[in-house]
Picture 1 (spheres, rainbow, N blue to C red):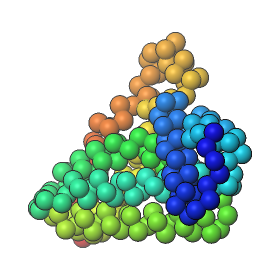
Picture 2: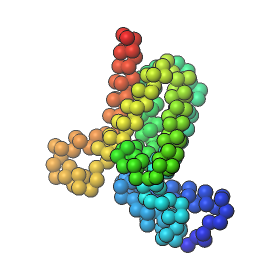
Picture 3: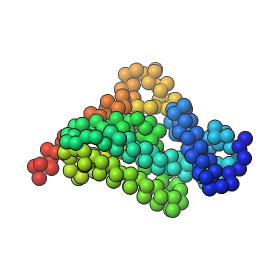
Picture 4: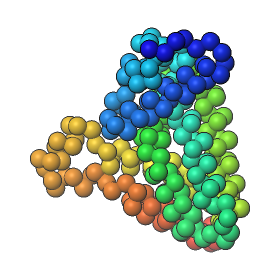
Length: 218
């Protein structure tokens, strides 16, 4: 068992270790809904009460993980567009779909953030999440606007569609144990377990192309 962190650097490292442990468990167990604070603490090598020194609740821990996800998404979008210019709307949709789909736990968290996580932490913690997420969102918009033929308005609408669709489609594509068993018994219902990235890409491409047509007519 690791000793209690004393310096600011040690505390930051412990916090990062808990986030890494939570992300690894979410991937192994099939979703953040199966993650427990006890399991995260054990995976990070801390005392069973250690997580409470860094996160007041499981909700705060998961919200922090979602906050980190926004930064990861920004980074991969910036990398994907760094050397490019003149990207059309359909390709922007592909970039958004591919980059967010590469962050499976972030996609899972998006629906949980909207449904409960933001409302189950204190006001200051919710404010910090919103500030970080908004800043990362705006940096993604700026990167795509610089590299593409789309306007900022079009990209913002496409971003909203990406976040909403990714959160919902991820849940449908990764059913829990009960639904998974039901789909095995009733294969004709298994179409609800969507093929995540292809379906997301199709929705985003249709939206991106449609936005250009609608705004051109206004």
